[in-house]
Structure formats: structure tokens, C-alpha cells
Length: 292
Image (cartoon, rainbow, N blue to C red; front, side, top):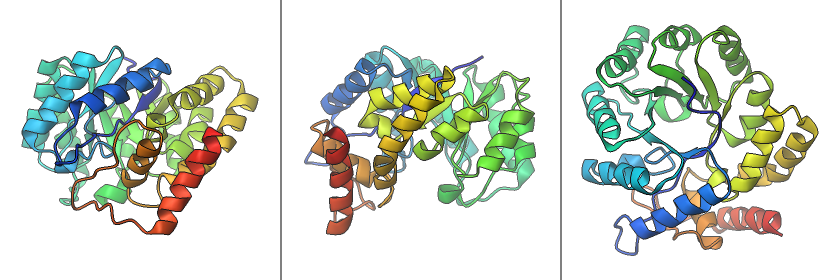
């Protein structure tokens, strides 16, 4: 059950001047990335500021994405509460999402059996393909290889979004799950090319909000064996990749999206728009130089 082969923008959640979700701008972002040939969209992830969406807003954003997207929708439904993750995943299924992305429980820092039970509880209860999301920088916990390989045995746990930044871990997971219906997907734009070279299948991307056609070109070239083209696009995009993390994601991508006229740069606290000028300058310089 392959659902994450290619490029999947982790789409931003635009807000208006009053701090409310700007659904018109959200539709524009979805249309923009789909016109560039992406394989799907991922609403309500870290880039979508899911942590500051109310449950009602979260559900409405997922419903809006399902209604308006013409590609696959993989809804972010993770939580540090298994009960809450189950509720959000059930909603994603009912809304018609094609899959769900579940961040590993943060703050709690569960042991290995807790991680396994968390994902299997949701997978057993909801008939929707699930992706594990391993992002130690946000959760304080790096899911062990053995746990991910064990989860790969479940028929509805179909992949992992790997954002550990560890190419050795990624290589091991690709090797150990190569005979399974299991995707290893990059959660870091700069790791996309290395991941694809060792058997990964795609990327859930921040940069694809801004330059989706270029991310598609990179991934399609690498998956087709044209590493000369893939390396060229990767090298050209590296300043943008770096700029997207000079401040906490999604602060930089929203500044860049505003520069490109895609949506406003409004954030929700505790993320602040009081950004050091040197960071703003680096973000805008990378975007403008690449656009030229």
C-alpha cells in the first residue's frame, strides 16, 4: 500500500489579520502546489501550526483540504494523547483523507512498548493508511529502528516520515523494510536526495510550499536514476533549504510565502513575528536569489 511516493508539501495554514484561518489563502496554496505536479498535500502538520489549531479548526482544515485538493491528502493527526490521536485520525478517515501522519508522542517520552502500542491502537481502530513521524528535535525521542521495523509489520502502518537527520538510520530502515509495503520518506528537505539514493520513496516538504515544481524535478530525477539532474537541483535549492530553518519552522516559510505572494506571514503565538532582521534578510535573500 504505497501512498507516499513523490513530493508532498507540508502545507502552511494561512491566517488573516485577525488570527483566523484564511481558507481562501489555504485554497490558493493547495492549487499552487498541485499545479506544479506534487503528488499530494499534508495539512495540519508541524508546518501547518497544528499545535495551535483548536480541534474544530484542525478538523475544518482537513475537511477543506480533502474537498479542494485533487491529489492525495495525508492529514496530520498525531498527538501526545493516544485518545486524541485516535479521535483526529477517525475524523480524517470520515472526512475522506487518503492517509494520516502521526507524530510520535511528544513530552510524555514513552518507552518502546508505549510507542508501539500508541501506533497499533490507532492502526487497529481506523481503516486508513498511517505514517509514523519520527522527529526527535520536536519530540525529545528518537524512535528506535527496531520499533519502526516492528510497526512496519502492521498492514495499515505503511511508512515513516524520517526527520532524525541521520542518514545511517535512514539507510538501515530502508534496508530492513525493503521487502515490506513500507515507505521511508524524508522529513528534511536537505536529506531528500540522500534518502532517495538509499531506497526512500519521497519527501514531505517545507520548501515545496514555495518551489513545488523544483522539488518535483529533484525527486523525479533521482527516482528515475538521473542523479546528475537531481544533484544540480539539490545544490541550487540548498540555500533555500537552509533558510527555512534559520528560525523555527514555519516562521521562515511563512515569511517566504508572503514574499512570493502566496499567503500572509501571520503566525500564532507562541511563534512570534518579532524575528531578527538578519534572519529575515537571509530568508528573503535565498528566495529572491533562487527566484532570479
